[in-house]
Image (cartoon, rainbow, N blue to C red; front, side, top):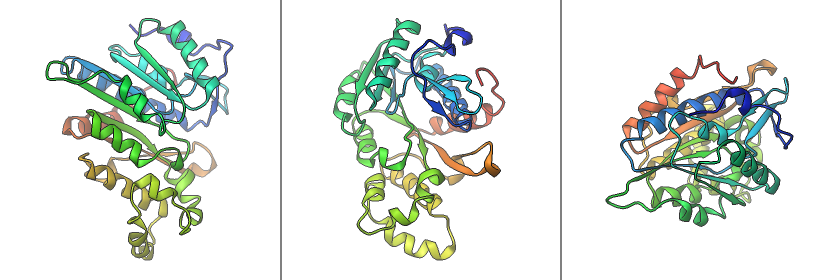
Length: 285
């Protein structure tokens, strides 16, 4: 059973990183999808694994109101039908230590693995932590990828997960807050950042023709990213399936897209349901 909201968001004296108010929209979608996924897959798979590549400290604080909110690990742990296994990777040592302490206090019975370091360099350790799939033991994973900037995640990391396990991805694409804002930097021929992010340099030739159509650079790269996931067998039907998140202030400026990728049409159906159903979700927020 989920724990009480008041216990989940109280100030426990540990560090609580601050986030912008626009993170609320993201957290609503994540919470809704986690619950829908975990409950729907409970009887279809022997083991459901939740992977968080940028786990944080477990709680966050809105910078405008100072209100405490559950971070992505708690959004996955505090659901009616918890996952069977949790893997949290975090590059900041203090954040990870605090997260582990909070999980021990609030969710002591959950099977959790905590991995310190850059998720791109710890991918082998992450894969080893996932229970082995067999004909008699079916394992399905949901991986949350919530980077601060595009350079924090490599396409090769995503490919290694996709090549080795059955996994769906829920991820943030920093369309405007990073890619579009720094387009002149990323366009430099001596900057391989986007090549690493997309797993290819073919985007450069395509952009030469696309820019003449007055396309926004961030949107162009976001779609190229989706097309790259498609090469791994993931469904991608339309850019309209991405959720655009905007600032709640500063003229409602666009920030990033939330994207979901599955090789199964049911997963895409769940995501579309999430986008519609989480709009009016009021609890915790």
